[in-house]
Image (spheres, rainbow, N blue to C red):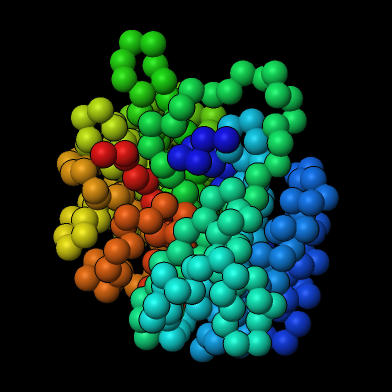
Length: 351
């Protein structure tokens, strides 16, 4: 599998908060997901071991933490993705922690190094004194090895959502469409959606938005937004931003309505892209498209108001060098609130 490939669907995220029984609950849920996507028995055992070690580390060392598990499709293959996120104390010596066979006190002894070795894709980012984010992917064999693979991805895209505390349905969602037109260079369309309110009705609006985004034949953000607006009539509506990323030109064009935050993020810079007021599905003003450069080393971040919009790149040293899934996870965990649904999607164009 191409490690740089982008997921074709957001997927439902199962969140498990740190506490007694986290390891056993994580193993149980991971085993069910492994069975769903057809992981071999040995790879399912590898996943269960990784989940157990990650959960044990959270329970013994983190101030507050959670595991997130999900099934994601990458081209013709499916994978179980594991995220372990916490609020401290961080890892002072990451190199030592990643040595295969090393163990933090009282854990199973396999350590973070073994999780890295077992996973098909592994990433970790730590903020001393504030917390650590870990990502591990376990991929199933292709259902049909003879099936033609999609064209190589021209950008890496991933995101993450989390429902408000006390709810299982999330009103935030994201989606991605990669286009390879015959008469021009390939480009990527990305949507971030925040269904109004929370719970099942907000989730229904977001589901409709995702369907409309996927089915729209338009290639320009304003036209895609118009298609979603039509589809969302009769729902409670949503705040939505649609971005088109042109990797060859290293440019992004964005059209949105409502309070979605859209940022071109550099190592020490942040450029906001504006959205116009309104509620998609109810009332939106004349849509406006805003453009910006995507310099090498930068990423595009779209997120809902479930995250504090005042975060700055200096608070996350080294983060934008990570894969988009981990960038999204760290931003959501470190800047998110539990008073509302939260969602983030991140786009990275290879340098």
